[in-house]
Length: 69
Image 1 (cartoon, rainbow, N blue to C red):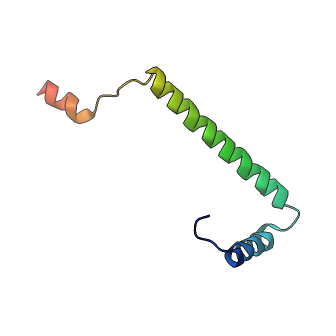
Image 2 (spheres, rainbow, N blue to C red):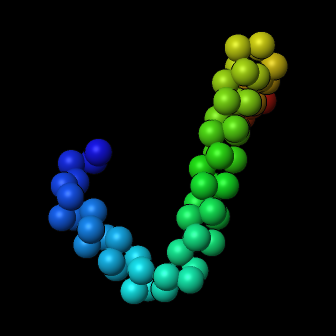
Image 3 (cartoon, rainbow, N blue to C red):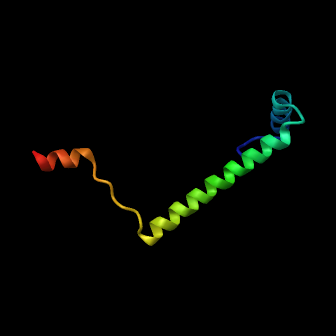
């Protein structure tokens, strides 16, 4: 897991507990979980749109300028 060992993970956990406190830790974890869930949902929806061919190509400014010139 990202090349982190047990000692590194324990140090990170202790630092997080010091910064946020033990009482806020469940709220921080819940917010992080919701954020990851929404990110995965967005990525999956974008992938579905691409597979269905619903993505429109946006012309670049340089191409428009070349056509006008």
